[in-house]
Image: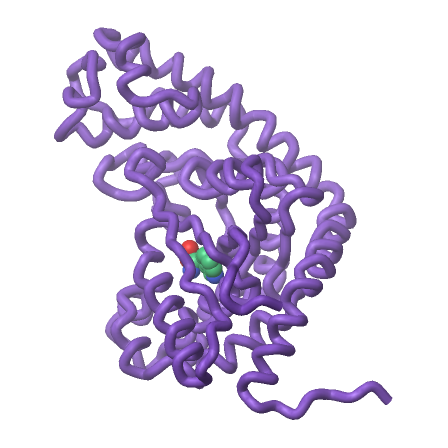
Length: 342
Ligand code: TRP
């Protein structure tokens, strides 16, 4: 294995925590599909081990993991072209994470803003796993020697930590074994905001279901939520500039543009001047035409859980063909005695 040249390989992960929504689709899944269509190896992971850093109901976790897998496939990820895995089924992730727990420093982890946010005031009562979360994430990426990681802006600090861990490992052991991974941060245009408040990200934890379009919503629900989405009294401007300081209006136009695979300016060149009462039905039709087949395929797959489980088993086998040799070499670098054939 060459240790200095790394072939491009894309890795990303999503937590199986239920309620996949439009933000996950446009911000993550659709971008994952775009990478799959390029000529690079793509690996996408349901990160169940990350999910349990806060307590999860076991039956719900298993359900959410299968549903996330169904969402991956329904969104266009092809298990024959992308490697689709559930994190706990590829044990090398957790094994490398332990090594990284011994590389990362307490001070680095203490600076992680996501830990501070999630642990809240009572950090003493947070799980050790929540504190170590970013080291496991670094292991997810580096156990594949992944070079590109598409994520949201909120994961940038974790990716910087991933580079710090790789650099310290390489330095401490005098090797050039782990690559410096490139973050590929989601652009503002793919960040989907709440339908009720354009300054907040669309989120599965928003108490108002009207704030988000779920990937399992049917056509009626989608149309209704778009019809009720917050806007302002003005109509559509004729260029993107006219959306400044109009977060709700901008969000709806950006969602339209993302579905139509056009720029915001292209959309406005065509639809500028219309009132939202005219625009919303167009957006609803477009959203339904893109999302209805996805939710239909998700429910078909959820009725065929054996198929999902077979896909995950096969994904884990393919993944381990990559991860096992990288873990073996890591253990060798660190000084573990290798197993012998008996
Ligand atoms: N922490 C990521 C999130 O909450 C999920 C994740 C886990 C991930 N491991 C990863 C993302 C590896 C990219 C690469 O969104």
